[in-house]
Amino acid sequence: MNIISQIKINGKWVDQESIPREETMKIIAETICMAVNKAGFAIDKKDKTA
Image 1 (cartoon, rainbow, N blue to C red):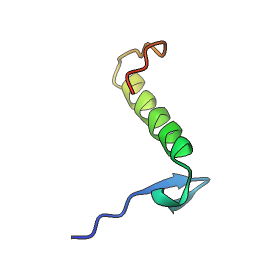
Image 2: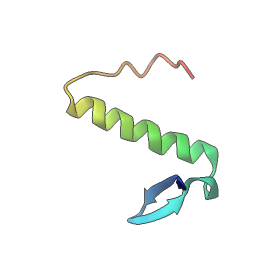
Image 3: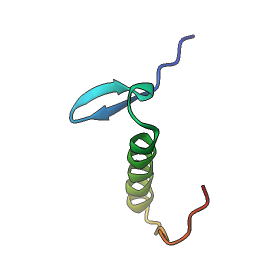
């Protein structure tokens, strides 16, 4: 099995390794926040655990 990590940016799939780590983390955090909000939970953005 070959697992490829890609993120959709501006409608195009891009290899995760080809973009800066900070940008990757920002996109992932935004996606998680949207999913949590849709599930009916709230996020306290003041706390940073990572």
